[in-house]
Amino acid sequence: MSIDRSPALFGDLPDELLIQILGDLSARDLSAICLVSKKLNKLADPILHKSVAFDHPRHHVSFSESLARRPRRGSLIHEVRLEYPSEELSEVMAIPESPHPLRFDHFSHTISTMSNLENLEVSVPEALSHGIGNLFNGPFDLACLKTCSLFYQREDGGYWDLQENIHIFSHPTLESLTIRRAKLDQRGFESLEKPENTALKELHLLECDINDDALADILLHPEALQEITITQVADPTPELEESPLDIGDYILALSSANHSLVTITIDFPTLVAKHALRLREFQALKSLTLRDYQLIGQGHPRLHSVGLPPILEKLNLLGRLGEDEEIAELLCYTLEHTLARQQCTIAVSEKEHKIPVEIIEACKKSEHFHLEID
Image (cartoon, rainbow, N blue to C red; front, side, top):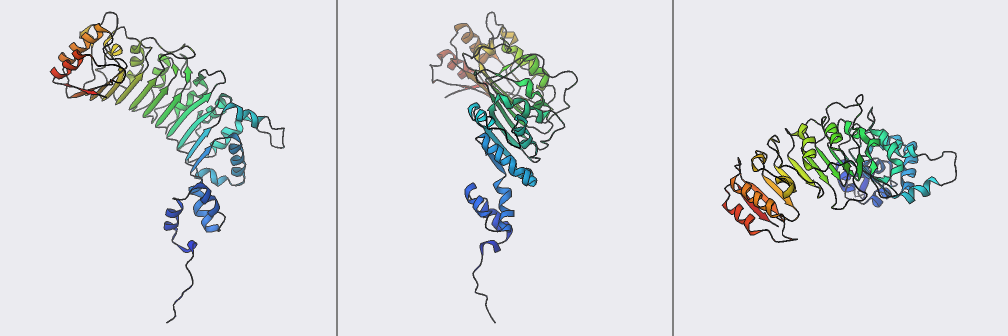
């Protein structure tokens, strides 16, 4: 009986084991593996191109040229990150004319070929806003998209116009959307272009200038929005033009999702509140984040109008809690006398100042509210 003593080759391993090994390699090593054999190239190529990052427009252009030679590669891509500043885009656009001149829509066309794309992160110059926005203006090329982040850099540091990308809110499969430093006026969707129900579950509007009527308009379409975050800095630059002055206008804009919202975060220091918020309609809300004066109301607050969500589990109070004596007194009364269906944690921070003793004592007396100090 003869025994084969020839050395085992790496490529002779079962495909399942090879894929597991290749998945632990760096992109550079994977690129090298692709040159070893046709079999290893076939196994490594989907892993190598599953996640692609363009940190310079030249990378974007060269990859687009490779897709023209191998169109199948576009369907392998599940994640794409585009991140480069205006000067780098200008540098590429300034290249002398060639037989295949580069156009702004060249960048968006490359993305449109990625039929299985699930995650798209965009942080590029505003010049690309229109072209990329057309990707969302149906019929949808990105039929598998689940997560998207959009930020277009303006040279003057201002807010980019979300109207160019408004159809992102029409995307049927998108579940999580992050918009950074955008503005949107009262137009929202035009009457003839409103979408059907969408799968959007998370919406994050970070340092944006968003009209509350437009926000109400775009939130009519998610079937079950679960989480929304609206943030702004204490001293916005440039000055806000579209955002409301009263937090109650944003709460009203969220009312179409009061059956499904689980988390609301409004970290927006400049918003005031003429009246105490009424949140009893938010039947699913478990976590609420805002400031004490936005909850209780300013000017002439009335305790009978305070309405906390029925199953609220955590109330995060930002900023300097109890800084206004009248609001602190009303907050104490609310904590001592408001009835809740279950225990609720009041989460505050002492990093900037000491929590007033009366608020601490009010929580100790309450049967329903527990104070958690960071």
